Length: 115
Length: 111
Image (cartoon, rainbow over all chains, first blue to last red; front, side):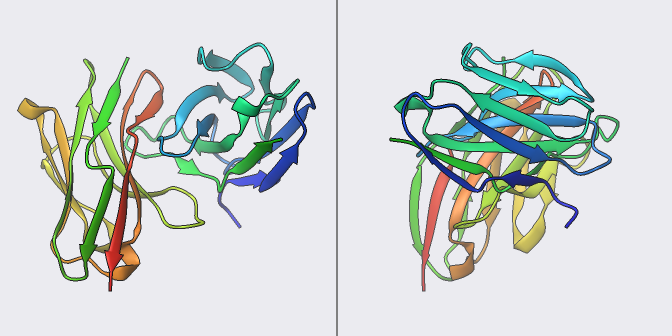
């Protein structure tokens, strides 16, 4: 499979617990994005990386959220001390910055439910 | 910052009917526009995109969109929908190194 892979597909956690999601982008893509999507809304930008550098973080990304892309390949998104408001679909996308006339390829997402 | 407005969030229509979904964007820079589709249980897929040139863009599955710069619009159309077009449709504008999405249109096609 040469698409964007996300793991796990579903995660149910108790409030206050920490969770970590993984994203494996298309191998030659140097940009990786995290988005969050809640019911009835479009995806909202959280952060993006170019290679291993995290270049921008949205104000939506509170201090409880941290993302890494240590070797410029896969990325992880960690949420500490989860709250019910964190329940959402977390989407990862990747692109090749040199392909300026191309869209982003999205993964299937990780659905987080905080109970 | 860029933004996108989509109206008529819920659309119900019968097979063979025509579909038009409105999209208005706000962005001061060079405009790259997209329509994505999300079928039930599946990931976001690119339907079509506009970067430059012919403002009438043709995409997959018989969809097309027209970029009207003076109206800041990028409306999506399909002349005759099928049951398999039941999905959520998102318009997006690229700027500032990210895509900004609208809230989406939930389209249900009744056989």
